[in-house]
Length: 290
Image (tube, rainbow, N blue to C red; front, side, top):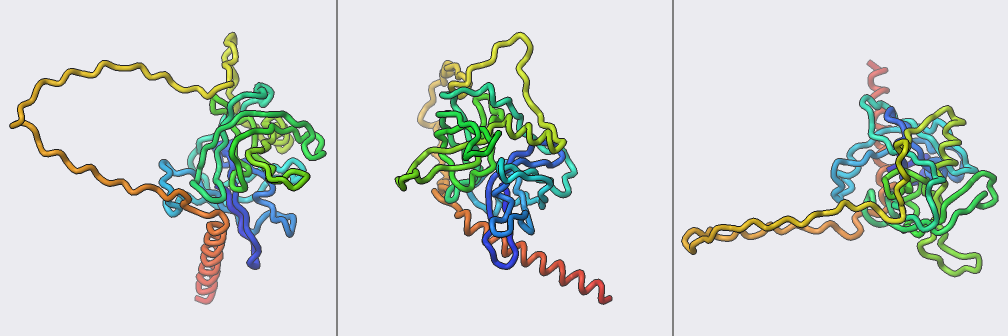
């Protein structure tokens, strides 16, 4: 998860990103990390790495915070490259596939953080169209998909049925030109556009080429491992005397349906960041005075 905090009480931003190099390079949308009012990167950026288990509690889910900075961005393509600070161990990276392999009708998966809902949410859909030069921007080629996306999903990966990234989720159509509301129409910048832009920045990505001589697997449906039925073992008969009392099952508290609100979360984190900066500044002042 990517968060940007502005100075002077201005509104921050939140979205999603993908780690593309193990030393801490993250690909996301430019509009997630560039402040709209100034046209410059946010004063402070934080990236929250996914925990081993997502619980629905933002305190534990957002415990792996890393500071980040913008090293390159393109507002025309809506792409930005971040560098994480203080990475000491290799991070897991997403495999990037050539988007030319994807076809209309293919099943796809999007991962991100909805405005009101669970963190690291997964939604599914299909590629419904391909659009070249999106919004009149030359070279900005996108997929139109039916995946359920909203503001917090910006910058997150669009994955094919093999789990490879084929796009960067970038825009949502909420209202048609005549003012009528639209649902489930989303756009993802093709990975071929993103990788070309990254090459221009001197950055390569890890791909997963198909083995030589093998046919490309169909991605018209998500791959689900088959489960073979197993014979149920026969239990020996028990007498009533050998039966033990049944333990009362533990009651598991359900996770709230909407455990967080994106705007409130950004506001809370911005305040925490400002308080931390103030405390560090005060400590530095005291050390100078000694």
